Image (tube, rainbow, N blue to C red; front, side):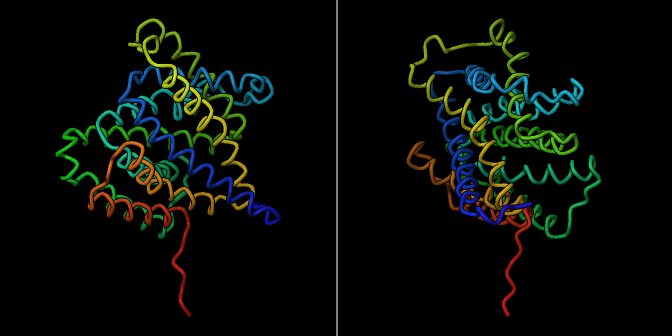
Length: 296
């Protein structure tokens, strides 16, 4: 249940999550056009995050789950998700990522929840998902982007794939009742355990020639922002203002990404992209439980 005595803390926590998630899209897009490879960025994320959560692993490890359940949940927000997202950033603008990933996520979550948990979406959520898909369709149809990023459609497909993995993580977490602290210790440690050896032995690297500024930015933001700080802030928000209000706040992410990408990356969304953004944002709000206010 929400804690009505501390609503201000909850709203600040929710906005903090929006800021971190929006910043992650922009920082990741910046990273893939610089020196580091996408494999370097994945490795940095999980090395830093594993070091950060190491003191809590023994206490919060989910001993009630089987190894394949832990592995599935961890991969849902781990290496496959990140490689698809980072790969998408190589083809499409940050604003498209904000819309495609955050827009299709509630659609996949609703479908998987219906199949896996028998949680049938209500009419408003279904309407919200339809609006989201229209907004994403406008992004895919944006001919202004084709001129500067002719292979943006590849990035769009990769963003959608990454959203599917996140949805698997979310539904698995709910089905097997993984706590936020358990997720925070599982995801980086499990992914580093199997990806680390592959990265060291086989995958392309540029970390040895990258400037320290890039390494520190990507390592700190990737490893601490979404992996640790955002998890704690999200949990605080859900406990104080409730899951519906928190989910509705997440509708701010696509717009925030688009606004931050303008000064940081020099990426100006087209008019069609803005239209898709507004539609997707409205759809996310509906899918999260927001209702139009009836005028008396």
